[in-house]
View 1 (cartoon, one colour):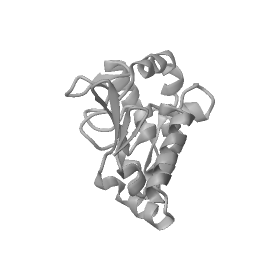
View 2 (cartoon, helix red, strand yellow; view 1 turned 135 degrees about the vertical axis):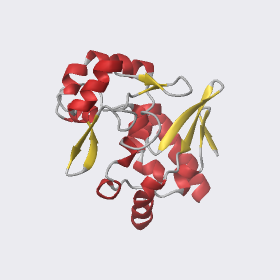
View 3 (cartoon, one colour; view 1 turned 90 degrees about the vertical axis):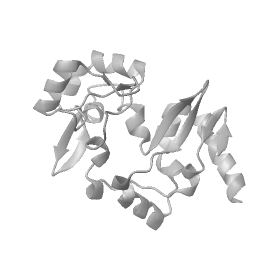
View 4 (cartoon, one colour; view 1 turned 60 degrees about the vertical axis):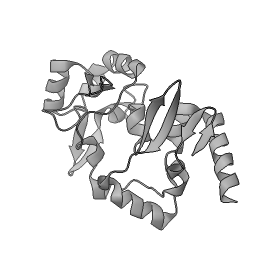
Length: 188
């Protein structure tokens, strides 16, 4: 484990090779699981402010789920999460040729909203957990990502490189540079 500015980082971030392969997994991380994606409180506010713009990219069942429970729900631990469509797919999902994609991210790409998507989605397959006053950054192992592991090995892309933009979004450029420096010390 590495500690960067009091943030605990799993060794998996540099040991595991990972490169998302949507055409193989079909966006399964958005459609499988027992709860929606974790949300930060400020993300809920942003989503509420821009829900009309986001809805333009949602499927009718997702719109209905949001109308019923709002832009967030709670998981079994009481954590804020995205709502689900009848207990299954994320409410903010859509599909093209059988591949799941995020309506929030699409609204951002089209210039309709100023934020990309929930940070927990951007960081996946990494999950952030609270540990006392700090956080732990851990790889969430899930068989739906096996094609991404194979592609990461083939192309020699460590997880922290694949997640560079997301990690910088969460912790900042300076933190990411420190992470890269620490990994460099270990690998040399």
